[in-house]
Length: 387
Image 1 (cartoon, rainbow, N blue to C red):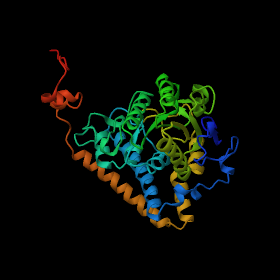
Image 2: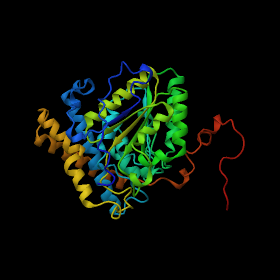
Image 3: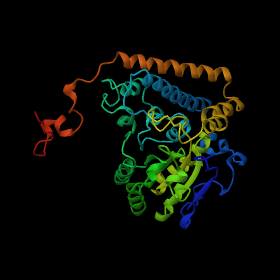
Image 4: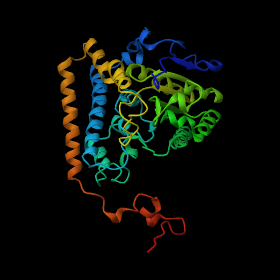
């Protein structure tokens, strides 16, 4: 199955120079099929300590992301949303599992497929859907659209459209955290295609050289736009490239939210306690095209998509797990799903009723000094208008 050839669990540099003796690492299973693995990630402390309410909330967040994305797709098809629309359907366990492990001084930055991360950090469907509609009530006042969700109050810094452009920004955030003496980190998410961009390697070099608490998370969904990994990247796994910079790395699977939480927790411990960077490659899959404008009819088969849905859908797998654990039953899951659908529908109604930005606001929120002229210290003109 092209694009899904990463059915392995790999690790690298996990005990380099004896520095990780205190950090519990995954077993060394470099050629093990995950479907045959006996590892039960629910037994690790980070998952075992979860309350029933916390487990239900993890499930609810994944369902909310799925229903938000599906409803935004309908709105796009109805002509309410323009431009690009990069959907996160199929990857929900990665964002939800990662965010659920964070503490107050941990920050997140990501690329343009950012809706899932935004909802996972606690942003509301209304402000997110309104942003897709280009409305004044959107999280970026209707100026950012699909690729530029932001919530600084929730330590969420976007949403960046330039491939790999967020990697040096995440590095800078990690530098700031260390400089201020805080016990935190920056989780910098990227797609598999971003690993071939130069700024990523420059960032890895400085992360290792300056020992910065940054965690680079490669959400490898098998395709860089419409090109499978086997055609766009030499050497696998992608995370192994961290070896060149003596940075710890591992490859995990994004359809098991318990596995995601275990690996993120380990990386956070390294960042918090030892101020060390990590590269995590999380194997996942997107059900839709690179964007809505990409029909994905030419580079993968319907059978491939259906096989993943059948065997590795993160929501269905976690639902089955929670039912087996006695956390809830099928009826409870259906009610959570109904509530998520209603919330998504309500966000569309909110967006339709919201106003568009005033054209006079076009130059607002671009430069801080133009929005705060009384505190302006630089000289010259910020904007040049022509007739």
